[in-house]
Length: 162
Image 1 (cartoon, helix red, strand yellow):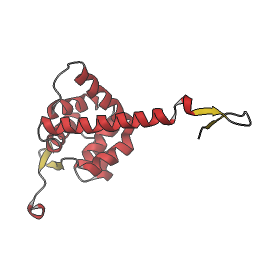
Image 2 (cartoon, helix red, strand yellow; image 1 turned 30 degrees about the horizontal axis):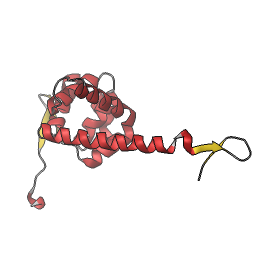
Image 3 (tube, helix red, strand yellow; image 1 turned 90 degrees about the horizontal axis):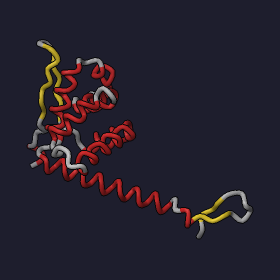
Image 4 (spheres, helix red, strand yellow; image 1 turned 60 degrees about the horizontal axis):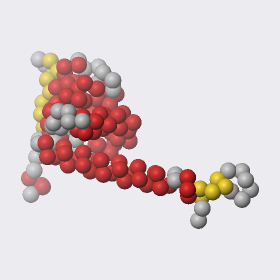
């Protein structure tokens, strides 16, 4: 029963006297992060697909966590936003950005482990995202198909044909 279910969390130690708790990301978190960091997530997604398609290492939650950790230096705002979101404190991005690197990496690994329980969940997400991206690409190509455009009657450009 959902009323009895407790979301799993993990504690991330900052130092001997301080820590914070993180949870896995949910759908609304992923949507919000995509809206705020779409181009960066697109780059990371492309890297994951490239690894998958070129026989690279197996795509696992641990591997994804490692990839995000490696990208942290490149995309610190995304990492800080992801951690603050999973900590339930999205307004603390600036404070998270200032945490020591090992603390941020521990948090990322905990969050990925709580978000994707097993390789099958991560694979399923990648399939869904890939299908959505391919559908979007097909739609954009059909909308911008030059064959569908013809010169406008006044000669000042193009207009969509009916």
